[in-house]
Image (cartoon, rainbow, N blue to C red; front, side, top):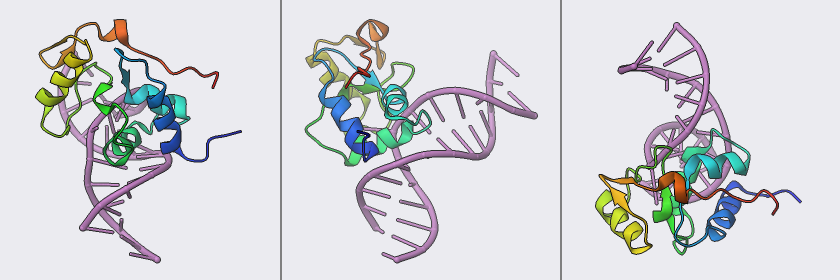
Length: 105
DNA sequence: CGAGTGACCGCAA
DNA sequence: ATTGCGGCCACTC
């Protein structure tokens, strides 16, 4: 059974994202089957399911997103609410809490 | 309906 | 080492 749509898969992965952790666009895109479709994840994040914690999505450098509604400060505040420490707009324990999707779905 | 953009990433010169 | 460009899917105008 193969996924029918890229967006659907991304949303599923986001739904499986553990609380208190974060992930990157590239990892989701790579796992979805297209490592170069990282921007697609960003697009989905903007027009996708608003119930998913998109604020836990960060770029490859562990930095906050670029066009997040309200600015990086808003996303940073959300991450802090989740217990994620953010400094200078960059996640401190980024590699420590960096969650990776389970390919055994 | 058609074309363009988008919260990115990786590689080439 | 740095800069510039291409590429994927979905959504909007």
